[in-house]
Image 1 (cartoon, rainbow, N blue to C red):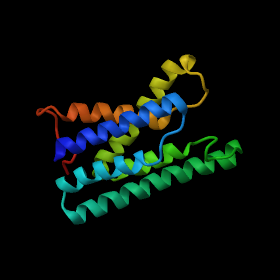
Image 2: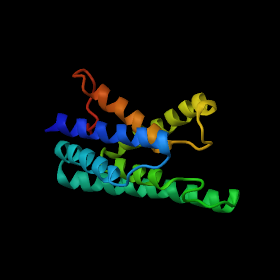
Image 3: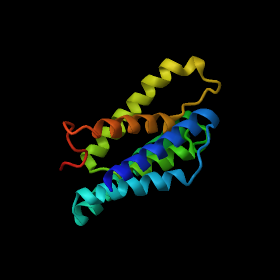
Length: 161
């Protein structure tokens, strides 16, 4: 069952990546599919009380990050937050991956995927038609790499506590 869920997660991330790069809009139903598929994998690896604690902490961390981004956008930059400075797809992607990992793993994957997105965007921004960052797409690409690497037996589990 786990390999099937991994393939579903990879397919969801691939579609998110493709749509975000191509159209800068992503079908909304891909985010629940991603969240549910990685959430089930997470649930199968940890005990129920830990699963609930992990996703609660992940959602609180994500909400805090989004609150700080919102405040920065409104108070410092004085521009509209949603769909101007930050896309709804990016917000949904942040919450979707909150279901998928224990908190330590979530923090590492979240922060490294944002760093990966920044570095890739800086490398390709001249070739992009729009002047916006396809954040959900780049983070989806990063997650595809993480899941692909996790297929190897010698790789540590993403769900170790």
